Image (cartoon, rainbow, N blue to C red; front, top):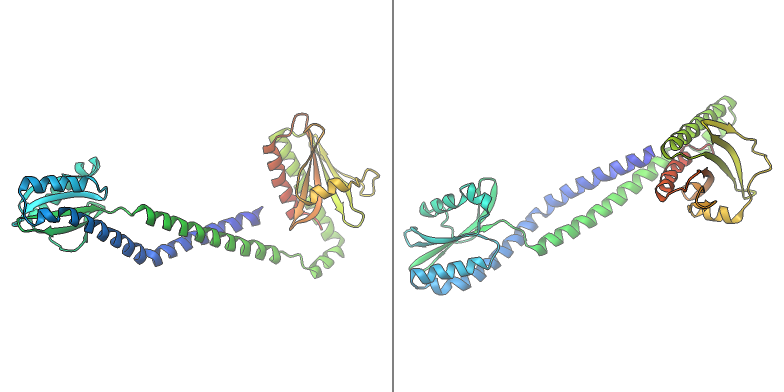
Amino acid sequence: MNNLFKSISVSVISSCAAIIVFFFIRADYIHETYMTHLSSLNQSLVSELKPFLEGKTKDEAESALKSAASSKKEVAFIALADMQNNYLGGFSGLTQKEINNGFSDLIISDIKNGKLSASKVESKYYGSEKFYYIKLKGVKFAFFVVYRYKLPAKLITEIIIETSIILLIIFISAFSFFYFFKKSAQPTAESESSVLRENPKETQRRTNSFEKLLAKTFSEASQNHSFESFAYYHYDKENLNLIKKYFYTSGILSKLDQNQPEAEKRKEIISELKKGSPIIKARSKNAYIAVIENKNLLGAVLVTKNKTITGTEISYLKNICRDIAYNIIK
């Protein structure tokens, strides 16, 4: 379980790092795409306002201004001014928060002072918020257009899809590499195993450690879910047997004779356990849970309860069986 947690942690960190790198690399592309979108939007606005830039009355120009601005959500503010930058009227698409922050007054002040006189789209901050602006010159009047920085839906969708794909690839790759690398790095080499088998004291120490793990695991499970008993079965590959090794009930773990006559030789049970499928018996009051490592069946845990064993409890039992598989004596 510890190895699994470390693998997930490394995968999450790697994914976050990959996303940061992705946005760093794609920042220019995102900006260029947004500016292309803004230029297209601006061309549309110019087409609507062009007749009024070429010479109309103030009322006609102001009416056209409001009509054009109201149809475009990106327009935060559009103002009508004379050729000396005197503010004549405008349309505000600012939010209430932006109005409360005085953005309207700041924009009008910048118009009067000639600070929004660029003939191409440029950026400017009001407070901590980013806006883009442009001045459209006419014969009698000028229009000052201020756009809110808002990525188009198509670009946002594209970024989300790319980000999701990168996250998925990096997470799976990092998890697979780290998890299986740690697994292969475990001290389970055949040479080491043979030495341990030849050392009775070391074998006994590992046996005691495994028994303590079983006792602790079954004790916590009993307290948390009121299970009545547990039995741990070893899978005998040669004889295709499930041999009961330990039995736990009422806080006591008992070690059993591995040659006992009640060894279970049931092909259908073993077949299902190899698939990792739980086997529910006795009207959902008994359940066999497979103890599997790297798709190899190592054994099984038989759980009994006075009440029906729920789906949530089955998931819980699968988790503790993964811990047992990780610490099992092979």
